[in-house]
Length: 243
Ligand code: SF4
Ligand code: FES
Image 1 (tube, helix red, strand yellow):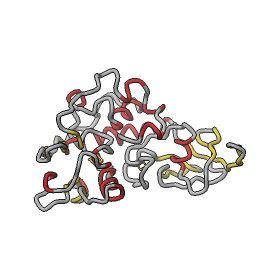
Image 2 (cartoon, rainbow, N blue to C red; image 1 turned 90 degrees about the horizontal axis):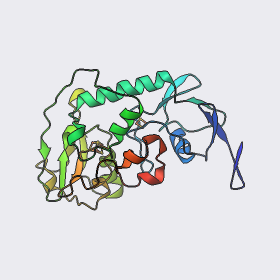
Image 3 (cartoon, rainbow, N blue to C red; image 1 turned 90 degrees about the vertical axis):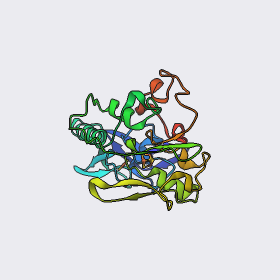
Image 4 (cartoon, helix red, strand yellow; image 1 turned 180 degrees about the vertical axis):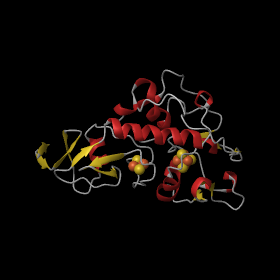
């Protein structure tokens, strides 16, 4: 048991160190609140977990599970920062990079991108696998927002933000397997034919460079961007309010 502000909280162990948790919290919620980093892409502290990217896979009592969906429980022994798990994460990241078209040097999100920052953190130095080079047209139809589907990692954060926060249904996921892709949920399939606005939460939630404001390119110089000053391991939930 640990004591926080006079309150005794149960704890689990993460890589050998105690992490206190509140009832109902997931492993990643408690760890993040305690300032501990568990790699993740589809999890965001403001949204219900999605459990799809598997970057947050940890070992609990020897068994693999997603830290964003597994509930914390007293006495759990959780391993996250191990050679084996980080090697698996690096492979997942390499697969994501080859599955889309990610040209970091020309991307507005470079330096602000969770995928790029996580890849750096996991020691990814190259794609390893053969690139798919999928054909994914850009949607520039909206007056204020550009969609570059080339970088989509299918985390569904925009789907959740549009539905749960904006109370709209701008985005959806279509297709199966390798053909799974992000859709704009309008008759024409174009963003201009939705009620999406630049002030929507969905417009700022994308962890990579898909949903971008128009007329505001490269506003923050390289060297002063989000992950330039602080690595992904040092960013606490409060920093992640607006991706
Ligand atoms: Fe995730 Fe961005 Fe793709 Fe939406 S557009 S699914 S937020 S990567
Ligand atoms: Fe847990 Fe994506 S962060 S599965």
